[in-house]
Length: 589
Image (cartoon, rainbow, N blue to C red; front, side):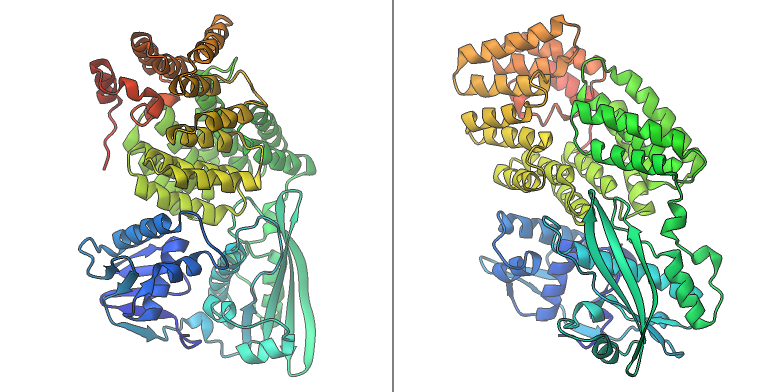
């Protein structure tokens, strides 16, 4: 291993910060977790070949990973893009073996000021601990690093506070060691210990700060942090003040990130906000309607609180998702109007709120077809809060819609790395693979999502689409029917079931399902895009084109995927389709 003081690895004109994951060569880019892991493995080998199995073990320790080779290739491709290595002069592919770095690697002790405490106030944030079923293995390590990065800012204000870097604590063999052993080995006076547990769907962090001097150990502070939905770990104000007291220094007010103070909502508002987030992730009609109700309640309860802006942004998300699904009695135009109002209010309160900019991006993308404006808002949201997983999530959907599937996969990986156990983010990460026609990899993502939430509508739906393209029509129909258990008359599902029956030569069943869709239309339901899919399935192409044109004029949010939708491939060669595609105005990069 590198020495404990290793901070930076240099290779050619590049330098990699082992703490921040920043790759530098004139400008800085923060590498996604998988790219960072692969690059470190290659740099550690220092010119020797690292085979595919070794990379797989580094990325997914302890077992085989379905689709590993494809994932590794995507990761290497993204890494080369960040390195500007289009000619493969930095990372060399050794055919049928693996990869190696072609540049000489050197190690630097680039120790920053916050790791040079002269007062004896050296703090070690120990690795977060906890056994939580279904939790991504690297999430606890990611959260530990997140808190260490926050402490760096605090250390700038408390000039006498030193901080052990993430690399040092991560690699330290902590098992069966006493606090005295740990403090001595890490040369730290203070230890922060964190136990993570899952309570009611949210993560609780139980923390204790101890001071160790010789054989004397004293508890300085203890408390609990109730995590927000992302994994940007805050520093408790009580903890910050305890360190300031120990240092005999005044804590700069601007550096206090007091999670409890920021969450001073009344009980009703807190509960409604949490319930809204949980319902939002269901992605069902009833779930989204409940989410809207909860967020409206939260907004009323916490209007005087700064977090009111965040509740408004998530209310906008809910309106947009209701509009996307085109549920009965839901007018997408009304949902867009409500979402615009909520976004505007959120940005008036907090102009730099990542959640609001991500919602604005989704509105531009799915409802207004303002492609460049959408991308600008997505990238701004990520720049404002790189740990806000839904921004990466929706940006991935946007990128795959634009035909930039490899870039979409990287954003999907970033979303999953930051989201912990989000089943919907895991399921939606299948879309880039599906649109790239890598159906086994799409199925793998769906199966992972169903391992978290066996009833997730989206995972069964996308799974059905992938199975259908693999020719597994009966299994596809079962997947659609499983998705439809909560809403059997969902036109999206009925259209796809019509396709599966038609492709499997079950003509009678296809016609019967098409009749169900027509009957739904007679009740006043309006879903021309999915009627187009159903008519295309039974080769009534004139009616399919007519419905698609109607969907286009009504600005159906599903139209943005018309050129990727395998359910419409019978229409792709028709002049009418080509004209609509041109009007759509998408420009792939």
